[in-house]
View (cartoon, rainbow, N blue to C red):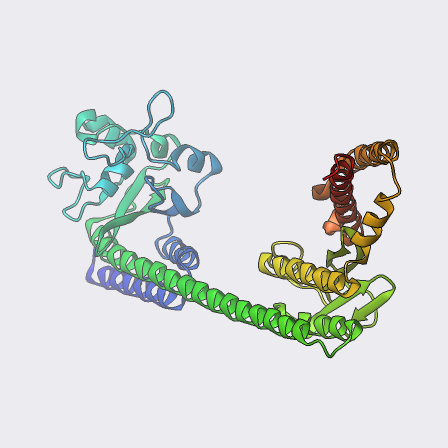
Length: 424
């Protein structure tokens, strides 16, 4: 190589290094950085195929590749040796046994004295046909020969290292012979070390961002939980105030609920009890709704519904978090108790008075009718499959919940009639 040619090669290498390092600095993720790296390598070195392997569990599969056929990738993707039953083979230390020359380079089991290995631990060959013919299989180790079978004569395998050791592998293949030389391999080894350190830094940065995002998520949930507890506290204080009517109580409760949801600015709450309706201001149709039942002495009197006026991200149930569903259920139970207290136990007293004029035969007859109704309701409930209801239809959900509560009322009534029949 003349001085001029050597100078041109040196400049090409310098340009390649600058392009790669700039891409590493600009990349926001490992996969973006690796795609840029392979694109630069393929363009500058004009090789047929490039790839980078990275550690994943016990294996080192291809993380990104460019130019390799799907057949090649399928055959070579996993490096783990396996037994006849498909179990991963491990050595005496418990480390996985990695196949082929790629595995030797990653595990650091290269021999520098051999002409196809380097002091740094890389492998390179300018003619894989000659490599397989001229070298003893014991020196090469067990190989799959996939690269050679796919027509790649020039192959270079460069370990990617960071401060902890080898984290992956840079692979360059070309179908022409004599594409590499010692100077290029030495350059790629230096570049590989910079790539390894930069990729490890990117991974650490991504993990830091994920932890930061998780911290913000937990803080958001904490603040939401505080808001929900504050809402429950305010409801309890409203309930303690004996100077306000039931209508005023229910209206105030309905107005508090949107503030306890994760999107209060677009949240709507509607509370219906018998023929009365209490709702936060909203005109028009809501999207997804969730409803909880309001009941008094086992009789369904209405529902407490929440919804959003605008589309929201899907969560535990529609756009609502699990904590929000639990909150609405708890408020519905609280409202049920408030309504029961306002009725002053009239329902129970009317049942007991009617029981005084019934004989045992009448009680048995009523028990039979209730039991038959319960059996029919059980069959009706089995026909519902809430999982198959599109978008968790609130109308169907309301029907299902009302049916379930009706069953509970029937069971409670049967027990009460049994007690009356036995004189308890």
